[in-house]
Length: 249
Image (tube, rainbow, N blue to C red; front, top):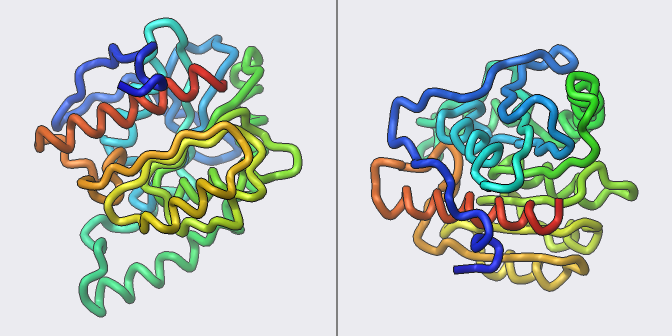
């Protein structure tokens, strides 16, 4: 077992279907946001979902992050950047012209420069909601992985540690700018060469791992938790993420 999962490997049993969220919804800067974890903690995690939005697998993942480490708990926030209008999961993969057209049209409103400026205000609003927050980590799924990569490269990062899972649009030039510890948990659909180049450009503490038999989105909306292997890798991914946050957040 990786050193990043040894200290915190008693996550709650993963629910295959019919998951009941442990958190609640609040408004942060007029953005509906899922919030989970004890209300008065000093450490928080911003969870940036994939293009399919607030899916049960992603919400369950937030609950795991909030309480899965037996010694270190976190308050986790998932803002609904897409304001209730995510991509439809049956558009992916875009195997015909109709799906390609629908997904391409939808992405016009999902370009990263449109959403990146919202992040600082969301953190500030969360800190007003919980004034005890002193430090932040970020986990990004697919689309959110690119958000995490860019934010980790800011001159004065808002976060102390970042995790990308099934990262979208991997760009080794992003890695050269990263200033905080970075974890990447890549799927079979990411190019191993791109992941390797990204890793080589990192100058910070890092953990890079390929989940070579898992689909893109294996820790979020596309996780097939009825499949034993996929469920086990979903769990392992969260154990690794928790271990990384334990070390660096």
